[in-house]
Image 1 (tube, rainbow, N blue to C red):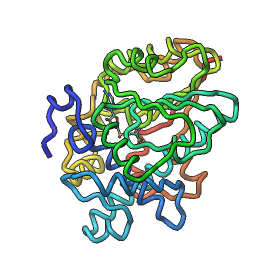
Image 2 (cartoon, protein in one colour):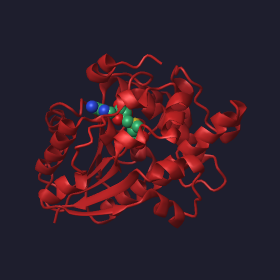
Image 3 (cartoon, rainbow, N blue to C red):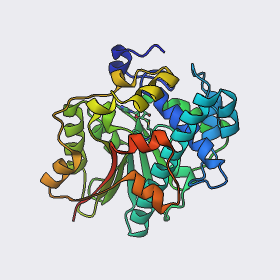
Image 4 (cartoon, protein in one colour):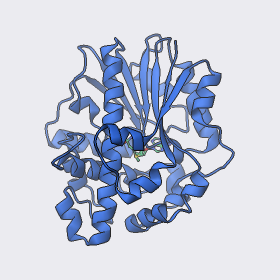
Length: 300
Ligand SMILES: C[S@@+](CC[C@H](N)C(=O)[O-])C[C@H]1O[C@@H](n2cnc3c(N)ncnc32)[C@H](O)[C@@H]1O
C-alpha cells in the first residue's frame, strides 16, 4: 500500500496512512459483534467497513474472513479479539466516569469509534471526538447515510493531535473548568516522543480536578516491530506499520509523565482483562499482549 512519511505528516483519509488503521479497527469490531460470545455490540461498524474503498478486503464476519484463506481467518480473529477486549474495557471506563458525575469526554484519535451512539450516557453529557479532518468527514458521511443518532451531544473536532488541538477543542465547546474523562486508544504509538509528551501536557493543562484518562500503551515498540507476529499482521494488511509507528526506545512511559503531573496511575494487562471476560486469546493476540497494557490515571 502507498503509505509514505508525507501522508503521515500532512494528514490522511480513511484508506491512507494511519487512517486505514481506523477502518481495520471498525471491521474488527463488526466481526467481534457477530460472534456468539461477543464482548461488544457495535452495529454501525459494519457500515464503515463496507463503505470505504480499501486496498484490502474488510470482512465483517469471521465467515467472510475465512473465505480469504487460513491467514485471513487467523489475522481477523486476532484483530476482533484484541479489539473486543480493549473496547469493552474502555467502554466500562467511560461509563463509570459518567456514573460518577463526569459530564464531558474527549476521545483522542476517535477514528470510527461510535461510543457516542452505542453507549448510554447521562442526560446532558457531551462527547468530543478528535481526529483528522478527512477521517471525521468519512465517518460523518456514513453516520448520516444510516440515520445514526448519538445518545449524548457529540462534537467532532477536526484537528491534528501533533499540533495545537486544544484551540479547536475549546472552540467546539469543551469546558476546561469541568472534570473530563479522556481516552487515547490506539494512538500513542503513532506519535513521536515529543508529540506524545506534548499531548500529555495538554491533557493535564485542560484537566480540572476529578478528571481521568485511559490510554492504550504499547511498550517496547522497537522490539515489537521486529517480532514475527507483528510483521505477519503488517504483511497481511500490506501496511507498513513499522513506518507508521514511532519507535524511539528512549520514550518515557505515559504513566510516569502523568504521575509527575500529580495524577494517580494504575495499569491492567490485556491478557488478564481477557481472562476476566472469559476470552481465551488467540496465538497472535497472546504474543502481542506482552507489549500492550491499559494505563489509567486520575487527577484528585
Ligand atoms: C488505530 S486507529 C484507532 C481509532 C479509535 N481510537 C478506535 O479505537 O476505534 C488510529 C486513529 O488515530 C488517528 N490519529 C493518529 N495520529 C493522529 C494525529 N496526529 N491527529 C489526529 N488523529 C490521529 C488516526 O486518524 C486513526 O483514526
